[in-house]
Image 1 (cartoon, rainbow, N blue to C red):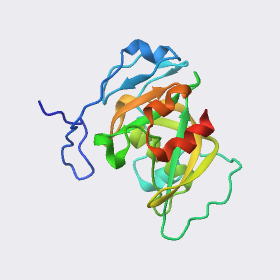
Image 2 (image 1 turned 90 degrees about the vertical axis):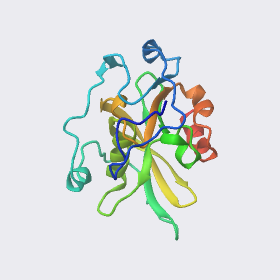
Image 3 (image 1 turned 60 degrees about the vertical axis):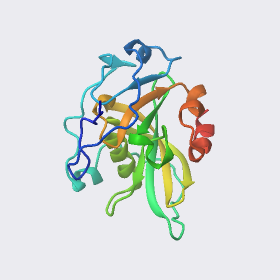
Image 4 (image 1 turned 135 degrees about the vertical axis):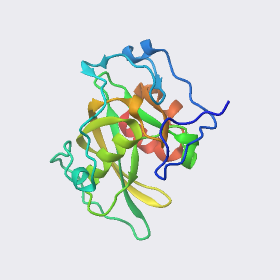
Length: 207
């Protein structure tokens, strides 16, 4: 039986999930020592860490809205110096109050990633922080607020500024088509889930 993502891609085409992820029992979300996984439109507890899971209904719907999105912060961060030949990108490590970290599972392991941190390229007119918040929402369904600088990371085509962030709303069940599952992972298990070599340095900073 063919499995489709409930959301079409940016061109309105159906997205076939070739190897579907497996959700964990709902009880895992409420136990900080356990890994928890939800699929698109999957079951979740009503709340976690005292904050409800609920769709971000007033999320920006225009580029202008995203450029000024709430959650950007005045923090100390180094100058972003883009190396020649690289595209600017931004991402977040979302830290839950119970100590676990949010990861996304790219649909069909896009880019060779089984799971990774939300990130994407910076569009013209967007700040790094605004781009990171937008990518977090599109890939994880979560509304986040920036809490600090994490690291800059060079990839084959991009140079990415990563921030620390906290969840302030949203629900992972509302993940976009680029993501086939969202995980909440104890820090000690991050290397078991985010296995791509590109994420090792970030995980070392978080653990």
